[in-house]
Figure (cartoon, rainbow, N blue to C red):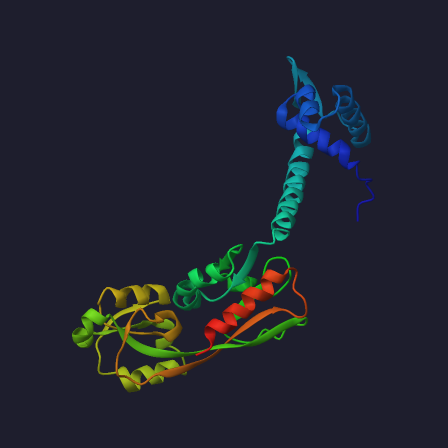
Length: 279
């Protein structure tokens, strides 16, 4: 580990401003201090690093090689600090509630209920994410998560929300074209559980198209391209069910912080979503 003593944060702030603006006086104006204070800070910083950081250029200054090297590190560090402060500011906005859920659920089940949610909570501004890698409840990035498996995370309250199943659907205006072919996901065809189900019940239908994204599959069905095998929660009420067997896709869970969340709005939105899921 390096034993180098870190410079004062004030010195680094003054250095970064002077480097970015190319002037001690403009840096002083931005920082609301005197030009002599900026000069003094940079002189002390140069003494500590043992290298000149600026050279005079006309009425301003420019970085030396050492100054450019230091700015590269200081600039990145300050950007990270500013981003962190921005995140805290966002976190303190009590109108924002971050909800993470699988893309098919967000598009099929949640989106049609969003208007009702906003009417019920006029101050709410939901942040809806389909990034399932960020599903862990951490009181900073995620307030509520909808997942296909319980999180079993310490400090998290979770309850069953919805039951899902794989169903055969077709556009209502194209029901007579059901024999046009089968639309399905590649992952379903290769699944140890879903693959045999498809081959048993839909093996006689010609495969019309195979997708790797359920939203594209839904779009193809809405365009009347054939019978699609989709999550019932993705299809929601947008498509006409076809008389074929269905297959359970299990339970979806909804989670939030155990006990009192960071603000009352989180609990209220959580309870509304649970209520919307009831038959």
